[in-house]
Image 1: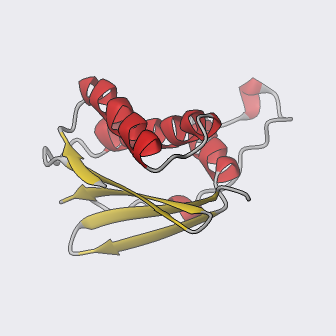
Image 2: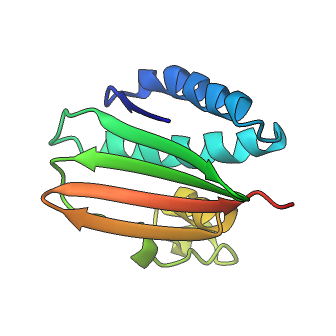
Length: 134
């Protein structure tokens, strides 16, 4: 399933509905919904907040094959931002000595099994793979 959403925070309700329909149609365990929602929310919200130069819709694609769930989120006409190259935050360090931001992306990285990033023709595409188990 694939759908485009307006690049605004208010789209999250529609996105969660889209995810819910996908989970239902594909008979994915409801416990996986939280993970999908959180990962998509974090990435979508970052695209809305930080890619303000573009007003293009953001595309979200969800596919299930075998025991894998593939999530693809694409932002158009933007500068590159490769989340696979972000450094982990030292959460043991005091708040005063940490940089602001980055915890959401770190959480996404821990919640999925694989992440791929592709940037071409001002299109930023993040592909996430989550194993569903047996």
